[in-house]
Image (cartoon, rainbow over all chains, first blue to last red; front, side):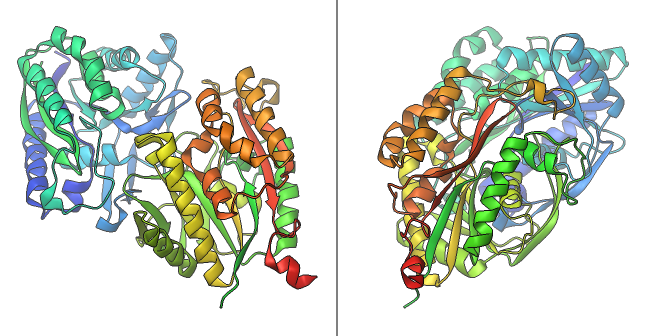
Length: 271
Length: 305
């Protein structure tokens, strides 16, 4: 079996940058739980897609063997910085690029000192404790012009490439749920989903994910994306669906809550 | 009573391609040139800045996106390598920038007094975005004038275009007030492209100019219409059409820099000088100037007379 585990996680730096905030602490604990489950599934590599890594021309894949730096978030700079030291499976990333091209998807690698790894990739990798030399990443960018179908195709390509290389993969989709957030400063302990309607939408979709009801999900996702202003149209979920072959048995929501008013969750799928 | 003033404002687009084509020593990738018409446009703009002798450059970039408030860099000096996440093959630039923190703080405070959410960025490890760097390098490659760097709050995208433009209008007025109290001569840079429809595949090499042309005829027509209005000084009409222009040409001015700059200049009905126009991967880019000193709209002109 190539795909051994799959996870949907948030990409906000707040839980890591503000570890003392009780309601955000629960995200850190959930990430630790998900990370433990991921590593227990004994993957050789983690296929990761973050909504915060934008591409507009080709599909870009991280092809730098080791990326290490100090990251300062452009919005939350006052809370400090995040150090990272991430390894990539360059062989598999290059195979993904070649496979994309063979299927008519323009693709190229990014192997540059100082390349700005996005906040979501750093948050997910560090919180899940993946991206080490022993458990490297293959990171795909979010081409802003790709739709749900194109994103599913991308993930399927990556899993197929891993299968050709005989590798077991964990798949991670990094992004948020409802997208409305507080545009004025709040006290962290008062954080909540900005709009009750968006909270209801998040809960409805998470319930369908827990039930593994893909048909119902596909029916409601366009409305969910539009009405709850979902992060990048929920393409990170479609990344997971593509990797899972369009089906999964169910899922466990380790935590759901608000991150500065937007919806966020840590979800473990049962492939 | 301090008598600082805005002496000129530039529309200063930031495609990293034009900086790449210049082959400055700070940028690692090497090019064979390209996009000369835009680069020559910036040469003319540089000559104007040289003559203006500003004390400070203020730049508003759409590639420093903030969701909670308008942010200002509040560190005296930042240095490091900025790599464009979209075009890392073209832009890997070692920057060293001196910031005018005093004026940035004043802008931040005036914005707060105007009812905006504002914040100073104090983290010394902050990485400056490529939009800010490209506009600054192209307008003043000597890097010898202090800078005020302003983020693009995403209200035009998050709320509505109209609400976003109102925010940028307030930000511009607050910027003007801060400059007036500073006693400094300021030049404003609105780091924006016009029509923003672009190609989805890069030629090899990227500077192959046989591949460069407007991606969209509609976008090109919109650019020419707006530029002609600006050249005639019909700025009220420009701002009346702005929402339609943004919608139909996918114009990057939506991010607010253009409105911020003109609000700061009190929306002068002044004919702009077109230093040049060119496309970059199909997007429309104009280097344009509203020179308030030359037009007699800055006090320095009266004082000199």
